[in-house]
Length: 367
Image (cartoon, rainbow, N blue to C red; front, side):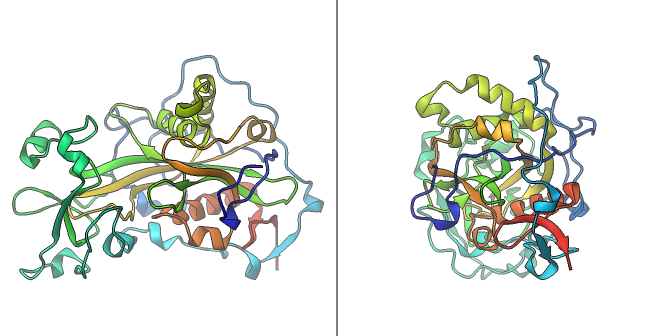
């Protein structure tokens, strides 16, 4: 059994489950080689449309026949009132203009107090004096960070963002598209402007409990439950980032080794993943001049695929587990991760015709 410390919602057992996969993405590749394009959040809550993950030329992985974890007559009936997401639900945290609470109120690790920043840049007058903070590691000029001099940094690369609103300060510094945060500088983030990540939401149905579960970690830094995502390396395909981060944080690649083949297989499996979100992330590390943006994808595993994963914590994870997706667990997740999982569940229900109860039980809709 894999579990995450004493966090009750994140207890699970190693057992397979599955439903039919989401259809493969079919859009044409566009934009820069790293896959960055304009914002697509206006399309929510329907399926976002962003570039296809690049196809892998190697020999394809043989995907086993998919099966439902239980037959339809065994599924419980879940009324509208019992559903995790109500019919016609909209994930407001992912709508344009929403999702700027944690970046204004929650300091990242070792951050100074944010004070009481104004709600928007239009309200930021001469009385707004944010505290400067950049993590000491940035002074060592790590390879993943911009030069400390902003003008030098912006002279070496073009600013990119999934957000349509591009704001700059009086000295040309990039401004957080959602508003002031109470802190200027880069904080813990390496890049001025948007810092790009990828978040893999990997799910299964537990055949013993009949509940929808996801691979979840507890972050090493803030000890909060999170999706096992990470930063996109320059020029890296998003499918590669998704597979690499999953291997490093949940399969113990760096600590235990031996997952190179599994990483290649996972990268191919992510080609069929459902796009969930692309855009700004309400993250406690965000500042006025540096913030997180991400692409989140949902991959639902078959019984055979789920049984092949041996979850081991690694990299930045303090613990890892198959965790039931419930109203309680979603409310406690790090940053915007709860909203990403809600959107994944919303789209998965549309794909399958099934519904999820507030405790994570998979069932059929009922009045």
